[in-house]
Image (spheres, rainbow, N blue to C red):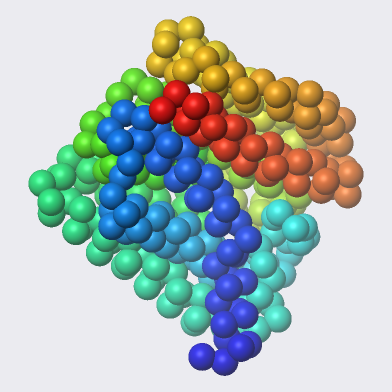
Length: 300
């Protein structure tokens, strides 16, 4: 494979965004270790490969469908939104993007089928919706506001994080549902804020998410509510002894969160000033997930 083609593949996969998957897995592994011991290296490898492949697949489908719809030519590019722009520069790489999406999805299906075949048929309740979500997110779900809001969080939280815990431990607990719900709210917010710069372009190709439907300013209330919801879930988890007290370490991020919420509210309609806040949102979400993992890990 030529250097140019490899470079295109990496850009289409958006490898710099795959850290979100790793943060979710660190949290899932840490909690699984607490209740069932360290996962086997063999199982850890295949679950990690499936999770990363799922993320790459949805990214590649997004690149392909946004190029085909013409959205890539309309969307303002930021370091955190608007796609990689690879197919605008290299239109011939569209087939490569579609192939990467399909191969990655088939890898997810293959690994999932192997896990299910080991007497884990109940995992189909997560696996089948997960596969459908990967393919339909860009082309269909983005046209239905509520589904567009929750789909990212469902994928990374209720499917990826909870699914990994289920595979590693063989059980679902109140804590695993709570942890996965926290992930869901945070990842919802990651995609929600990233939609702010794209409203006008997205509307032109038929997308309908909340920043289009109700406006950016009103959408900041959804953004703030989900951040507060994540904190409330952690506090309730500690109160009911579902989470160790050490998980309150996430409260250390509150000063930065206040800065983020005030900034987003103030600059909701000013994209240039909003861009640094997109980066702060990404950093805070990663920091929250990793600090939550640290808090869980201290109880091992």
